[in-house]
Length: 281
Image 1: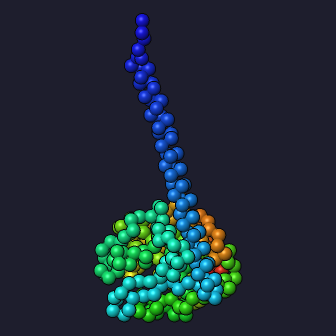
Image 2 (image 1 turned 30 degrees about the horizontal axis):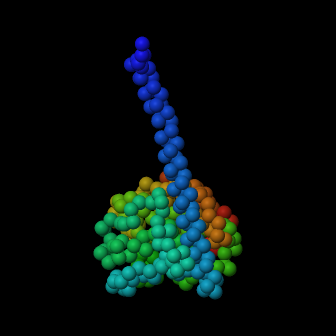
Image 3 (image 1 turned 90 degrees about the vertical axis):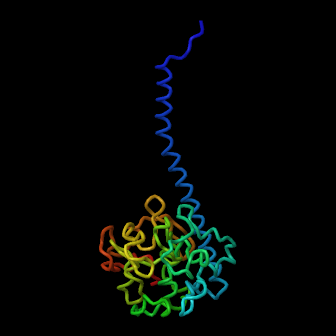
């Protein structure tokens, strides 16, 4: 006589399959996230190599961070992404595999919309504060026409090329972030007489920057890490002047400062320049 499965046996098999699925699905998700992080590391590595090749062809001078529109706000942005594209030959490198849609919300003026200036909304940010040093006068930092950044530095200037950041994960993760920038601001430099950023680079709790964020918008108050985006396992990818790249946690990126999660914006200072990863000294 043929014997069929009993209901109990079927339920046991289904339960075993459910348990295995519950165990394996998170593993699959972690593997997918790890693969995206590896792809992002590859992206930032290629972008950094593009910068290095650009520097080599321009007498070892750093890449120009950004060229603003004219005083009337017309025309398109132009930045380091434009400069190095002849070397990388791949626009998709500027978008992170873990980043959000390649767009921003509509609060910005129409002439700055992503469709006209999409290269400006890279999801990797350039350390323009030190690569294109200003004169240390922060009085006009909130006025684009006043050229917040100075001339490019010589790439022989960094005292520790392996310890000087050029690029990090940056910009938006969702359209609600309202972040549109291809630059990343270092923590603590607002109080540094050798350079300046906007409001400590927006590092700190409840930070909003009225240039990049409308009141109450953006993810700065969530992340408290300025334009650095910890989108990979609570950390972000970082490229250095010497060409190497690494995945780093926010505390490591802010080394040499008094930053910690929860510190109020405006209270972040550079305490140990030998540990600080953003400057060229």
